[in-house]
Image 1: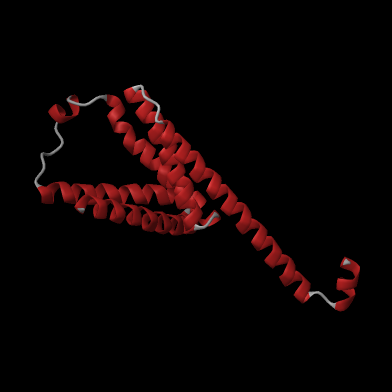
Image 2: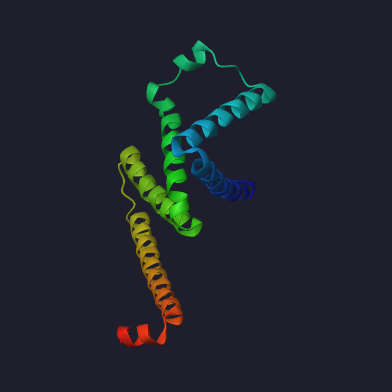
Length: 165
């Protein structure tokens, strides 16, 4: 149960961080915001490393890893930059769901590449989630369009209404 709660807290913190990062990016720029996100993350990581009394970074520790294991930082920059750019352009709900779909398909691909087995139920589930999300987005767009037309009609003069019909 602890791990489930931790995963939920992690998911909520990702959403909050994405919103805060996009607010900073709107003020100072996407890449500048990404820089400060990573700089503050680096500082907090150092503090946590010293508090936890984990081993300091040594050449022995670094030599025990492969070079590609350090690409998480590069991917982190990409995630923060893309999130900061996209968050103001769509609702938090849709962005979170589209991110989930991307993670789901990414996980299916990684599982296939590492185990050689393709999980058809997981892939089908991802397709169903994407289809449902797309349908819901289409309904929301239509609803927003209808509301916009009604608002425009309410503000038109009688002469404009006659010309529209």
